[in-house]
Length: 421
Image (cartoon, rainbow, N blue to C red):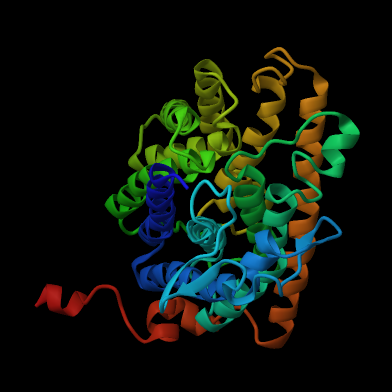
């Protein structure tokens, strides 16, 4: 057991946890004033509900349980963390194997924080029209049936893993360093499916729906960037050079994407905007996530620039196709995650098509992403449709016009009467 690794992974887990409050600020500033508390509550409940589900069976399905068909682990082996947590002399500690680099309880914390941020990302697409009660039930079902199995498939020797059957058949190891597939593609596909089922906000796309607090958006974006150092560098699972390089490549890509988005925005609208800078930061962070340990500084920069340009353009697709992805979860996380996943096939050192490898890496990245998209769409579709046909997703039209903060939660973020008085 290495105390340095243990300390670093505890810090990384805490940084990843901070990303969900950061999403609350990021998304909260982007909605109208009448829905900001509802938006932030969705992140709050992503934390709370996922924390319970992860303890009960999420950890077991993802990492602790016996493999079932390469898709998920059994929910019993690690139920209530019984495989990992033990009491010695009345004090709870970690039950570890002799060769553990750091306590398994730390890994539970780190992976729980990943699950929390993943489901919180979905909420941005559903802004201003979804009931809190339905959201809580969705989080419990989705973490159980989608996120936990996806994490198992990619990160725990499952169907989509580097040592899984698809990689073995192609002769190249699928690579998802910190969650391009598990987190970003997964969340974005889920968001799109739900949006198509529940429909658009009143007034979209004809009515201009603008963020109510851009400084709050910027605060959320900066906190996300900070938390991403735990997200990516922590995925080295040690305080080592790979962690250090992941910090560096993450910063390079985020910087490149910020500039790429702003330059694209300048050409299209004549302005550099704070919203564009915040969105560009996140796009670059998303795109480098699966590749942070295997691309050179040059290619990290290229990935960032491409992400800024492509994601900026992709966010406009919702107006062309009239699907109301309120806060651009699909355009940023879906497109950015897919872009980063596929670009490993071009830029991955020693394996990528342009970096000393061949087409096999690109093929395995494509197939893994495609299967993840199909799985996420199918599972989310069943869950979302069942909820729509039973308890319903949306508040009423009158409640939506009033604002979900007041109608669904009975509170308001700002007391405008006191301000005016």
